[in-house]
Image 1 (cartoon, helix red, strand yellow):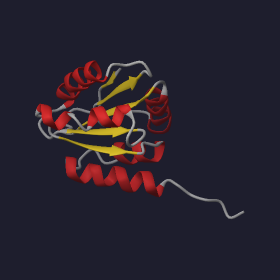
Image 2 (tube, rainbow, N blue to C red):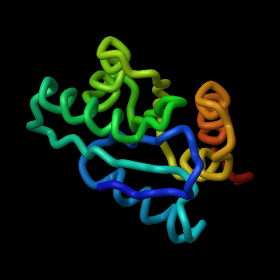
Image 3 (spheres, rainbow, N blue to C red):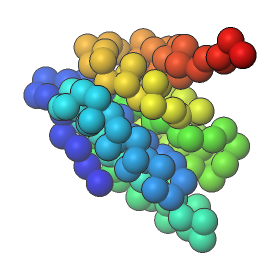
Amino acid sequence: MRFIGSPGVSVGVLLMTHEAMGAALVGAARHVLGKLPLDLDVIEVEASADPDSTLSNAARQARGLDRGEGVLVLTDLYGATPCNVAQRLPALGLKMHCVSGLNLPMLLRVLNYPEQSLDELAQTAASGGRGGIFIDHA
């Protein structure tokens, strides 16, 4: 499912998650932000998905998001199929960074900095994800 951001943005964002997670995060981000300032696409990988066909689909969607500055791929779990597939994308000639551990604070932080370069946005994603985790004082 593709979500088109504001004109003039250069880095696309691809969420690669397990089933239903990506759409839920995008829905929550739209609730908080209203409009999405970056082009965003979601691939939700089913448990029975073939990794090679998932890779082909991910490459096609990532190329569609790339406006010249690359694509930031956010995955839910390091070492799981969505992440493993994403990490194969550069071998297909795609300019991208993959950040794992996707959570809502990470996605919101990324969407709040649409002017950043791919390298900067990857760092913003990681710090946003970490910074959104708190332990109560109980």
